[in-house]
Image 1 (cartoon, helix red, strand yellow):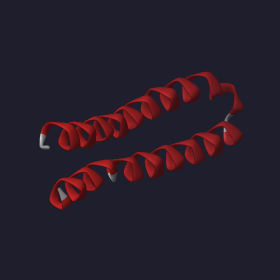
Image 2: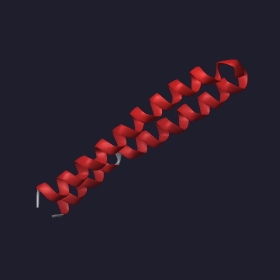
Image 3: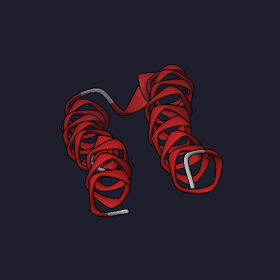
Image 4: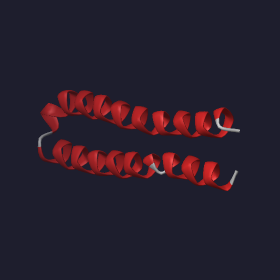
Length: 73
């Protein structure tokens, strides 16, 4: 059971990368809007799309960890 828990924990670590990526993207988008306010609509659209993809990666990691726990018992 210990090996399964370690594997599930490693699978959830994907969320760290997603959090860092979303934070960096948000910071850069804020800087871009501050420098060029007239392009804020396009910047926000690209930001939301990128954040959604990064968050989907974190959700996939969570699903994999849940599958590891319940399927390998």
